[in-house]
Length: 393
Ligand code: SDX
Image 1 (spheres, helix red, strand yellow):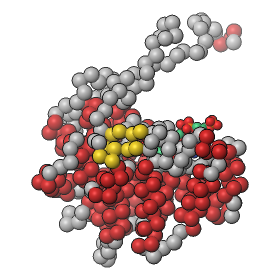
Image 2 (spheres, helix red, strand yellow; image 1 turned 60 degrees about the vertical axis):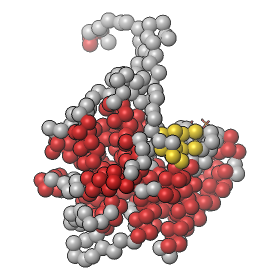
Image 3 (tube, rainbow, N blue to C red; image 1 turned 60 degrees about the horizontal axis):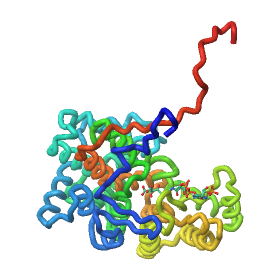
Image 4 (cartoon, helix red, strand yellow; image 1 turned 90 degrees about the vertical axis):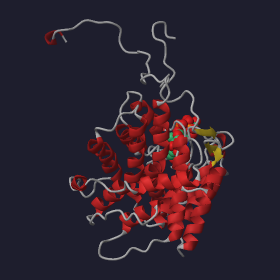
């Protein structure tokens, strides 16, 4: 209360009231999707199965999963006219900027079936987005390096299809590494939802105006782009590369972080909710070593990251502030090992987060108590005053 304005606690009825989708215990470092621990899903499930779980609330029976998978597989193609969309961008366009524009533009091909309150149309939009986002992502990347766009190959699995469109060429067969496909599927699971993070709150806020799913997801992609959010995985790798190339020793870098030198943060560390190790980071850290071994590669940046973690977790500055590695701290190293360019890392985050955005938007639309998001502010500007003619200023 400020006497005349009742402060609206955040985005009442849009983002931060109740939800049955994701449970996070920030102190204990627990994350569960619809009650299932993230560690179990990462080990035993598949990304499309987790997408089904997040959207429909239950693990699918085998026939439900195959029907869902078939629907996704049969919607991976884009309208042929849409391919021209990508040629409008400069070669250096960041794939995240291309992706958010493409998602919004994609809705123009379906504008007769975007009703947020028609369950069949919402299912159609959900399938179209899950099916086409990998195609859009691959095309955004191909646009940045001038290579031809490959059509999806529906004989492949979800992740395999994406890898082939990302790295394949029409001039030669593309050999999919099953280990990379399996690990990428698991990484998508780890990113699939995370309660009311910045981008999901954005999707809900836009959805609270009854905007369609494509427009809401496009806004979510833009929020995710920021370096404090999904853009952190790219920022972590750039931080590690700077330290490695400069020969800057870790202790002096950590001192600069503690002194809060402008622009010097330990990217990939800290979290708005976790005051403990992000359970996803623990899974990624383990997988990173395995992928490098499987690929017969070593990367000094992994050793550097692990050393940074060790120094930080042994330093009161970080311990007192409960700053631990978050999901983005190791993902850049593993994506690089898989052959992804740095500017595609956040696109991979968006691909993983899509089912969560969809599930949260659907939950909001189905909640009769939802109101349009309209937070208030406490006015601290000048009191009433009257116009002054220019000559008298
Ligand atoms: C994601 O919300 C989600 O769920 C997001 C996400 C998801 O799945 O959607 O988990 C994905 O976005 C993970 C976060 C990725 N971002 C980064 O790694 C960027 C680096 N991290 C920070 O910018 C920061 O930790 C945030 C943005 C994540 C959180 O910011 P806060 O809430 O301001 O951090 P805080 O309140 O916990 O900070 C407490 C103190 C402050 O110092 P003091 O004022 O007390 O002296 O810790 C400091 C902060 O300056 N601090 C850091 C730091 N993070 C916080 N100091 C150095 N390096 C950091 N990374």
